[in-house]
Length: 304
Image 1: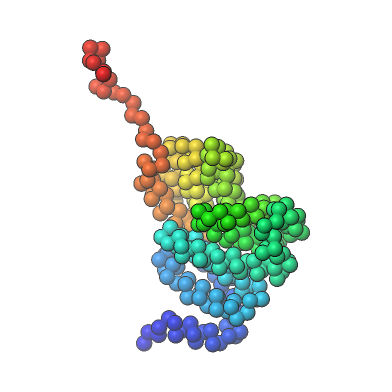
Image 2: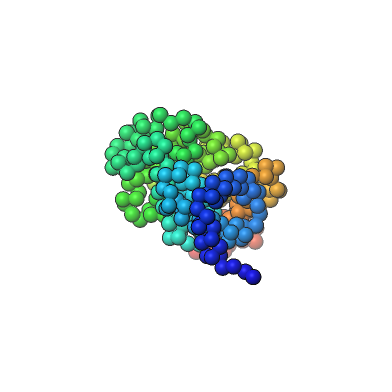
């Protein structure tokens, strides 16, 4: 007999605290398992029940910091990996939930009142962040990442865009405290941030390229998402069609990574690389084909 998923969830939630600690411990230990999976469809269908459970437990116990952290990480991961490309509005809800949870975490753990900081000079936030240690960088990372992703899907809202300086300050502090966190994800953040706009629009593409180069070097070229995002942002900003093709073809042709923690992200990166190559003529001017002798007008031919 197959039990409806909602009935199973209700049964688990009625166990209350007896399952809460076990669930958090299990999710903590499952990170490496998830990273090593290649079945994206299985993950995309299997994670939502856990998200519902975590949301319900967090509602009942809003001061359980480990629970809030896991809920934020899972919302961010799921929204970015499986939802944003197909349904940005739904992804935005995941990022908003993650931002809410991490705001609670920094308030509970560090007495950092985010709501009171917004609207104040970002220098005040930068000063408060000086008290954070490298061991505390992960909390800042997930706060900044979820907040930044949420803003990115609200670029048509001036109020949301006005909050981005605080995200930049938070991620700059993460970069100072632990630049290699999660295989260099702080570098990926700033590669996208600086590389995503041309100089004419106020971007700093070459500065972004430096961050992409650092994460590629750090992971020995095995973290393929860095190359995909470099092509998607930096190459398009400077209109370098050949480098765009080179990076994406390298992603597609790269064999299985030695570092198993890149298996899932690389499978997704290869999929993105193929899609981006198919759209190359939408992002770049067509290549000029060299003229052949047959195509050159003769001296006697009227070229007008």
